[in-house]
Amino acid sequence: MFDIAIVGGGIVGLATAVTLLKQWPSLRVVVLEKEANVAAHQTGHNSGVIHSGIYYKPGSLKANLCVDGVRRMTAFCEEHGIRYERCGKVIVATDNRELAALEELYRRGTANGVPGLRKISREELQEIEPHAAGIAALHSPNTGIVDYAEVSRAMAAELVQRGAAVQTGAEVRGIHQDGSGLRIETTAGEIAARFLINCAGLYSDEIARKMGIEPDVRIIPFRGEYYFLRKERQDLVRGLIYPVPDPQMPFLGVHFTRTVHGQVEAGPNAVLAFAREGYTKGRIRPGELWATLSYPGFRKLARRFWRTGLYEYYRSFSKAEFVRGLQRLVPEISMADVSPGGAGVRAQAVARDGNLVDDFRIVELPRAIHVLSAPSPAATASLAIGNYVGTLAMETFQRSESWMRSSSRQGTPY
Ligand SMILES: Cc1cc2nc3c(=O)[nH]c(=O)nc-3n(C[C@H](O)[C@H](O)[C@H](O)COP(=O)(O)OP(=O)(O)OC[C@H]3O[C@@H](n4cnc5c(N)ncnc54)[C@H](O)[C@@H]3O)c2cc1C
Image (cartoon, rainbow, N blue to C red; front, side, top):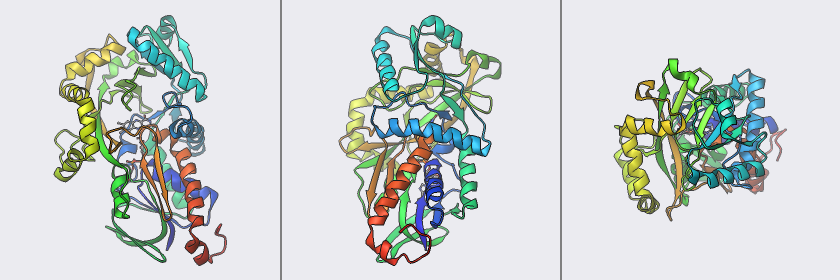
């Protein structure tokens, strides 16, 4: 019998396990991952940016856990010899209408305590990013880059070293509760655990449903597609160049990011995916697509944003339109400079009233903690989320008298 089973071997599940075991070394923890490797989904298909905490509403979980997460993430990388780089980032206003939103980002970033965040003039922008266009900008010198799949593999290795089980190829199919705990049916056999932490990313709502809970949000998958910048043109981008995002949308807008592997990516856009793991246009899972289309929250969302949605589709099929968007940030970019890259799928939680859930959503129940929404910057914030969820889990689970009474092992904190 495990004390805690964590569903999902993405960075949030792994970071939660790592922080739990650091604090309570005698816990028996298993991470259940359906794929053959950890970090197979959002964690392994993202921009690799260590966000500094600029965008998020002060006081929100995102703001607090992102700023705390940066410190924890860079310390983890240093401890494990993982390459990361503080390459810096500019957010560029290219139009007068964006100045108010840029000012609001500065206000939020300052309130969140983002180190070194500054408003810069057009001349300073030219010094930092000589090829970027813009009438005003923010500069965040500490924003960094890392490979989150590499971080996740290091977390999995640390977990094994600390005595946890990381079971890949174990898809959770059913969860049954009885007096002594949970019986978790997986494709690799049945597992018994006292408590569960759901970090299943694109399937987090499904896992909650398997425990008989109807979550107040549904995961709607939005694919983000990237282009690569040709090697000979990579000097057009020194660090990270972002536009001012649309304040109504949770996505940051198509941007340029350098990777720790020496590439420069442009993207991601945000198109509705027809499968939760729909990395390509042709990937359709009819049941999942139907679940999206028939969800009242999605229909309300679609009524509000159908123009944006159609435009994103058009841009997804039209390289010329994608490049036009990039030229607003770096006018010298041409069609010949970019080639199609990879894609990631964001788990966007949508409420029944059609609102996009902006903050992290973590729900506690007597036997389980469900991380129902952990979008960007959750990779950056993963170790802080892990600390938050781990603490919450121990408090919640300690309140469960059955566990306290039945736990007779030495060294457990109960
Ligand atoms: C295109 C894109 C760009 C992004 N850029 C950034 C960025 O630059 N910086 C940043 O901080 N964040 C970024 N993010 C967000 C970040 O990647 C995610 O917030 C983070 O990876 C979420 O981690 P997770 O562990 O919750 O989810 P995932 O990484 O998706 O992990 C969930 C895991 O659960 C497993 N699972 C699901 N169902 C089951 C089941 N039934 N049984 C067992 N296992 C199951 C899955 O296989 C998966 O491995 C980006 C995301 C995307 C998609």
